[in-house]
Amino acid sequence: MNIFDPVLMTRLVIILGIVNLSAGVLIFFSCRCLGGAKLGSKLMKYRTYKGFYKYHCYLWWIFWPSVMIHGLLAVIFIGWPQ
Image (cartoon, rainbow, N blue to C red):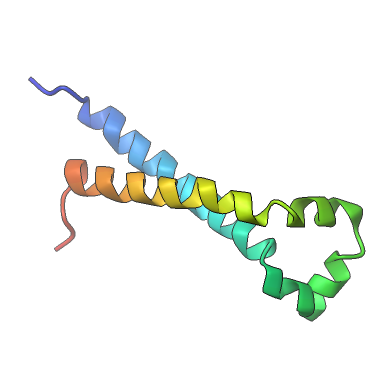
């Protein structure tokens, strides 16, 4: 008898992978070094981007726990890659 349903855990691993990718993209586009680049200077003209830009540090609090839980569940329920 399994305590955790393998299908549910596999779905959770996939969902966390999507969260990882999404958070990674958001972190990239809110990166402080992007502000000095040509793209960043163009984006800084928009008030919406400035509002998004100030939340960069908080995105890491979503990204790293998601990566750790995703990796742990993947190794436990799917197995170590060979």
